[in-house]
Image (cartoon, rainbow, N blue to C red; front, top):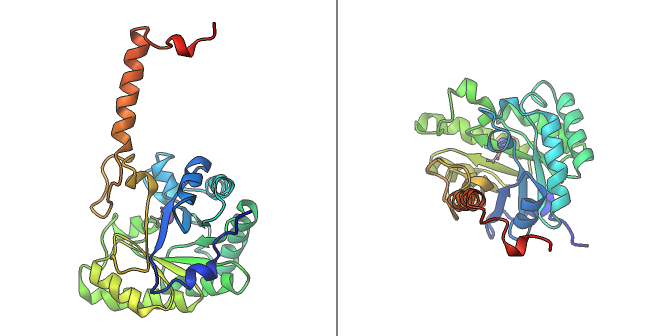
Length: 264
Ligand code: KIV
Ligand code: NA
């Protein structure tokens, strides 16, 4: 039985070998990611990536728990972190604890992640003091798409930098064991990384973050158009399209099933 990576182990990686993180939402892909990553995030991006929602705002606790269970079953070594969905934690520390405890208990994940800076610090402290490791998420916070006016890179205007740095410092000091820094200009990401004592995990941020995360489907080339910050390490979407075209032709031409595919 392989031992799981823990929150304190991730926290201790500040300034060390970069933390390798990816999302996964299903057992078979979690098993694949588990062979390479330190941390698997069951991101609420699953609402858009696999459920066809327009944003993460419609994602429910039930969706996060179901996919969290699948990912924990599929993986053995990597730490599994489950996103708290929009509406499940913002109201009060008590509401956040109730829902985070459900996620931890029903999935077996090692931590939860929630979005927001300074205003979420009391909630993060409340959870961590009660045994729930929390990963923070600052910069571009997709659950706030309606107040931000879309998915916009943050910190283009350097006047906003001190507030973003404050957000990172406040949640790190409140007990977050690591922070996702998403969609901020590179020099701001570097300031945030320098300002906090815990690892920053960048996405659309900077190579100098203490780790990196990408949405698995994006980096595998399964998502069609992706933002500039994604590198497609494979083009599986195009390969799948070719395979599907070949299948359709084979069926129409009665070339499939072939001799090897039938029971005599
Ligand atoms: O939901 C998600 O996939 C995320 C990562 C992109 C950090 O929050
Ligand atoms: Na997310």
